[in-house]
Image (cartoon, rainbow, N blue to C red; front, side):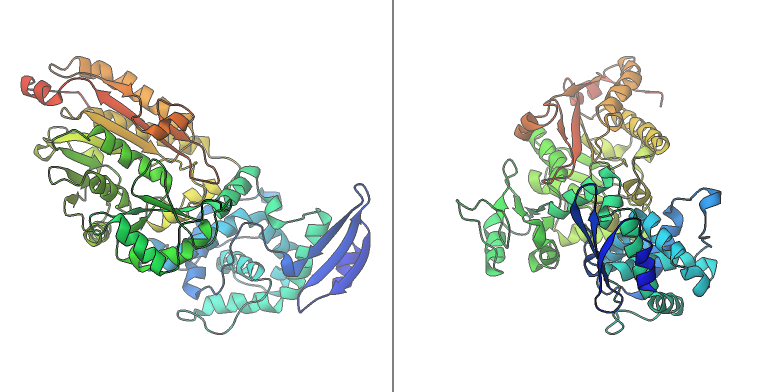
Length: 542
């Protein structure tokens, strides 16, 4: 059977050998280039995707539900796989286990990226006719096939984590019985289409993003509220970390460096990601793992308020709570109060308060309110001078969406965009509209001196153009309000801005060193407290 499949290849097969069960090695010669072309299914693995290892059955269920919501539909005449509605509901957002969430999103993302290949192999191998699974199990079959392929067509049957789910077991058994045919079909498709590596099938933007994610360093800021820089470094060195030698050209292994421009931040080679995630310093909140790009708005606020006697700061979309905590840790004075908004449910608010408590941030207050629902004349906001506006955005500058998803800072819909050739223009338009309205609402607060606007986007529409559009629409309204002055763009005070794409802003593309980001500042000229005292009434008409 395997030999017959390989004889039907489109170009010369010069040698065929059999490897371990289910593995095939085909050696061919491309006559046009006179280069050898080897397809070894035991080394099929994609260049950038990490091995999934043993996957709990519940993760299969979660990932198949996400896949069902996000998969790309083929034209009707090409739709050979029909996906019914999976059993159950999408419950991953209520899953408290961080490892389960991370593994679920990794699996769903991988299945979406390689959807075309996975479907083609399932269809052309005849898997459906020999294993007639119900339509509602086909999303699960695609997801489970990726796990089988990722594990080099070997699926461990022992040492499972979590309970056995009958539907998952049925699909796994079907794939196991057909794995030789699936493996051979994958080999044939690779030879037919001259696919050197599986990841070469991905769009260039997806491939580049995965490549950057693979090499991205790990960044962490020292929580000086609970510890100090020296104690954290000592704890790392007890665990075998060390500063690299001055003449070391390669930054790899268990080493750390202090990050230039950010006095509280350490950087580690990306290979230490898993080790650091489970490190006691991270678990107890002394070292906060957070990408370098997310430090930009926190350090911007520190620079703007360095001489201020104290005020309140709002973080409009707190997410994991780490950014709001970083802001207060850098200010580190009782006169400053940081409000963390954006928790949509009591459970999210409780989780956010738990994180803030673990980090020791007693002057960070969690409000289970939407920023747009807080009125500019709210008595609680009478001392508000800074709004950190980090709105929902395309996150097109992220190398990898996993951390954003795991910490609830993104909707699972981001996986559709990240696995596609380009971002949806319709979705981008909706995001821009929301962002402009948020900026305008922030401009309506009469005591606010600074609006620090931060995104993980590389699209101008979501960044500088959104700031300009909000000013054009809102400043005329403010000009008609007695005692208030309009906002203008202010150049970033951060030294790192001089190295960005536009020194007016902190603006960096996605790279092997960091995620892409944008940070801009709107400033209201004049003493806002004095202006407010003169303004007995205000009506901004929004």
